[in-house]
Structure formats: structure tokens, C-alpha cells
Length: 261
Image 1 (cartoon, rainbow, N blue to C red):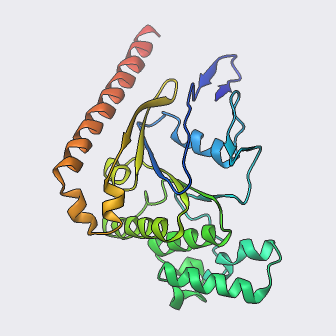
Image 2 (spheres, rainbow, N blue to C red; image 1 turned 135 degrees about the vertical axis):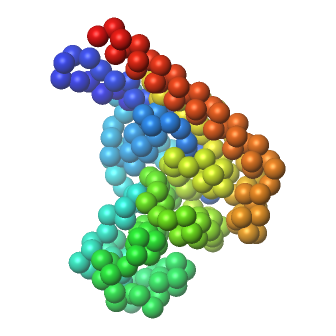
């Protein structure tokens, strides 16, 4: 992905990024700021068209947004004036699904995310964590093949974030959906990634790939116990050192450029 600038220069946001996902896989993507994580997710969502290369889903090229790919943003991007129920059934309503079928979907999903008793509340009356639960339910209501998450828990406090991590793992196991999650948190990437990609910047590329056991373990046991595993801690330290090295390199390059001016 290349962005051309008005002054004639350009930014190579992504280069030689190649990956394949299996159905039902949980992938986390991590890296320093400016490495192209969100750009990659926006290409997968169809919001951006890559300047070269191609994205396919089930053998069909991605040419734009589509219902087979659901997006959960850092902030829920919900209709705040609508009730929780109306937010969740928005997609099915747009598909002209019969009301009885819509109601069944909404009831099941709100029960799954623990919001059944709040279905008639307006979104603005809910806490941040509850709004993200609504966003997850709304995404699932469209029954997408792939769920794309761009820092979905970044704005939450630590306790709420941990609860939402557990909910994502639970939904992954219950629905069998393919999930791609972008995060700045190393802990979160380790916990929520069956496979974890560490990206490097300038240009954005896949630097290292990990296949991890922690998501599977955390889906069936206490999240905090999983984080106490020595292997979790060792992998976390390795990745942090990797990213710190990238950040130092970025800062060093910036300082050199500033000095040349």
C-alpha cells in the first residue's frame, strides 16, 4: 500500500505483506505505531484498495466492504440515539429479514454478551465496556465469515478490558468465526492470538510470526493463570525487546533527518 503525497513524495505503508488464514483462526497483529496495522485491517475490510497485490476471501477477490466481513472499531461506532436492541438488529433489518427472525437473533446475541436486560436502553446510557459488547453483538448479527477488530478494547479500564478479552475468547469458541485483532498491547496480543504477527515499520511488513497456545488455554481456564505462565512472560519480554528496538530505530532515524535539516 503506497500513499502518494501532494509534494510528489510518497509513503510506503505496506510492502510484501503476505498471509493466509484458516477458517476459525484467531489472529492478533502487533507492532509499533506507524507499522501499518490499521492500514492492513482497512484493506481487509475493503475500505482501502491496495496499490498492488490482492485480497481474497473464500477464493473471491475483495473489492470493497461486504457483509461477509464485520468490523468492530475502537469506539463502537454505534447509533447512540437508538436502543441496544435496534442497534443489534440494524443489519438484519437492512436485509429485510422478518421481524420474528430478527427478534430471535437479537435475543440470543444479547444473552450471549450479557446485555439481555439492557435491550431497551439507549446506547448513550451504557458504559464503554457495555457499548463494546453491543458492537460485538451488532457485528455478529450479520453472521460474517470474518470479524475484524481494530483496537476494540483500547479505551477500556483494565478490569473491563480483561472481562472483554474473556468474552472475545468465548465468542470465538462458540461461533467458530475467523477473527483478526489489531492491538498495541503485548499481553492482549499473546492472550488473544492463536497466531500472532509482529509488524515492523517503514515500510510496514511482517517481521516475525508466533504460533501460541495461550488463547486455547485461556478459553478454558482463568485468564490470569494463563498470564502467569513462565512461557507467556518469556514471550512477552522477547516481543517487547523487539518492539523497543524498532522504536529506538525509528527515533534514531527521525533525529538524523531532523539534524540534516
